[in-house]
Length: 342
Image 1 (cartoon, helix red, strand yellow):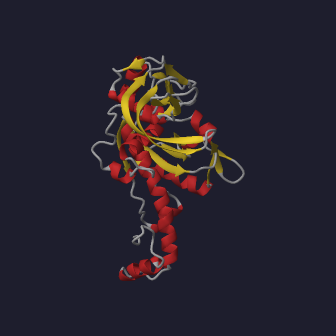
Image 2: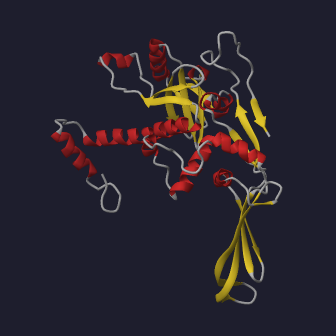
């Protein structure tokens, strides 16, 4: 519900109250509005995580769980988690989704206890998906530890026990420095000059005369696959501008350092494809037959770009502790780490 300028109307609470009155509800509309606002903050995170799981390629099913409970007294004992998901590895799991910008995720004992009670009741593992700024982790709820009053887990610990790669297929990758895209602009006509002889700005009428790509060796490449080219859109490229009397070359190249996760790359791809500045429409993407238009299989695109000298490393993260529900009966838990492909 928005006004003509896209903002909520000033009398939104009165309008909500009128709707509630039509429904036979006589409570405080301001309280309802605050609860709706909190709900609106939580649902996009659930939608985003569901889209990520669907896109990464190893998720067979993910759906929201209906959290309307009966009898009412059951709420004292059980808390229904946000999602149920089935991956290629292991059986179905329950997932509670959190989005917190603090480096420590804190859960009240009663809240966590109700979630675990529900998981124990249905006999399924309880995992927590946590978005810290733009990075998602997925870990077994049993890794949280009691602090003074609440159960906490640091982002560092969550990263070490991250199951998003093992279950959903997330990977980290590094592009090769020097890879990039370059635009040559020919100067055709000087439109004007502002400033003085020591400090001036020229305005030119220009024409794009050439567009080309380079790999990590700096070599010009006309044979890069379209998906390899699109990988550059997932990276924070450095801008270099070279001038000559007749042209300007704008280069957008990979610099030294940096690592990217596939699930973060998805946001960059969706932003690039949609030409938007705001967050992707996660709820709409849940119903879309195809989540991205430019890269069909991200893992395959990374493997191809390795051979084309645009990708330098691909890391397949393993958790320090592999949960029992992932291990086969004959396997024993082994220390985790990260396997790299170069």
